[in-house]
Length: 273
Length: 327
Image (tube, rainbow over all chains, first blue to last red; front, top):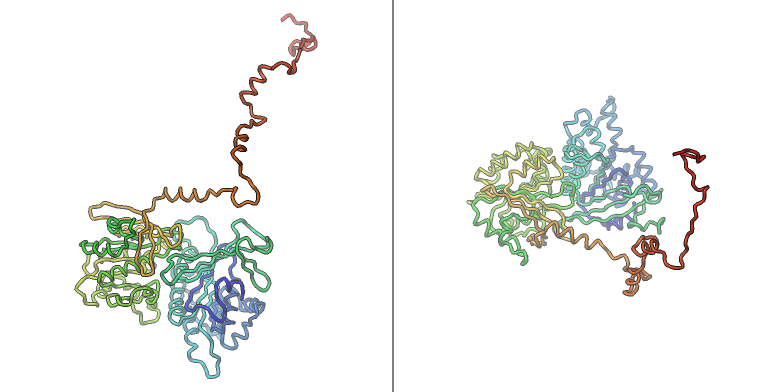
């Protein structure tokens, strides 16, 4: 959990807005450090977290979370965290074994036109299925869905429209129906100027920006590489009420270090001042 | 008629709005639409394809508010946002004539008991939907958003349905919201072509303002285009601030950008009047001015003179080194 980011977003584990869809996006950069922030943030806030980890293994997230002071294994044992390990599930789809129960969530690998309906069913069962708990189990806070990351689905052959439908349904379920929060990561590469809507990740990004409440867009510095400043992050709030129809944008620069990341206004890096 | 809220104001509203007085749209709209037999279709969409930075939804809500104030029946197909989010800000007293069809929670039928799906966007289903509320006047259909439907139905099918709605009598006007940055240009072009009025919105230069580009096609075939700056208040009344012109915008911005570099310094870089005069009088050392030229051509007394007497050794002819040729 990055304390500076919490003050920028005006949230804390004790009080945060519910029913929000936070979109983390990056362009030719790596914004996955923000996913680790949100994972540790919501676990500290005692929320019930459903994490679709499609890009890395469970050990990776566990190791990083250890540095941020949160134990994923413990959270999983206590039932606070439902972790979907995409890498393992892919293997079980492609190399089915008798004793390996296939959850069916990744069956789009065999049949891409089917779309992400079964993945959505998995999310739905893990989020709503918590109603039937045994006695003595701990009561957790609001549900949170974290996805890392959606662009992996595009490279696995899923159509952009299917991914947008998936995020729409997740938002309808998690944000609107049960008033939980949702954080999704989407990544873009800078391709050549493409006029058609065929450029998958760009269309996906635009579609998700229309759906989200808060967008954290991470990019490299426009002036080039710098050792002390790793990039810039643009924070765009979309008002839900009608007072300001357009987004409010703020720009920060950041530096990622061993146990966190620091954020500062442009030009105020400690290396520069 | 089909309204596509792609822009802020329909042209015929503008004609009668006195911009200096910041007349609101709603009063004018009421009289206009009452007079009109067949209101024009319009399309709403954010104007610039690369900016998701302006949402046309508030404009859509202002149209809904205006229509409710005119005591019309409105049916909303709500795909993009939840019903609560759409109703947020609308006056509760008017919601009797406002029928919101929730297509947000299950637009594709994944839960098994959907309310309204994208596949139901066809003439018969929509006509049945609208006729459910038995009202003598034909209703206004608002679609939020057309982009959702265009992702699941082919553009020709959508255009056909819109055209059939226009010709059929069940709905009086169709107002649609379209996110142009999510579709190919051909798709956007086809849908916008159907519209009688097209409003493209974009964020404005300052604060809460936005720019709207209105294109209206009249029945006679005349196309009128206009550009306005507007802002939407909390109760969704629209105020037109001024007619924008590109040239005006550009000169203003260049004037603002030319900041004075000698301002806000701890030392003085400015020149007083006498210093300015002296500076302008100063001749630069290596500039070949008229005075220098005359000085060189007509050396005055006392300047150095060069006396030259030709020497025999100096008279070296390259072609006759020994000086013995009889040339």
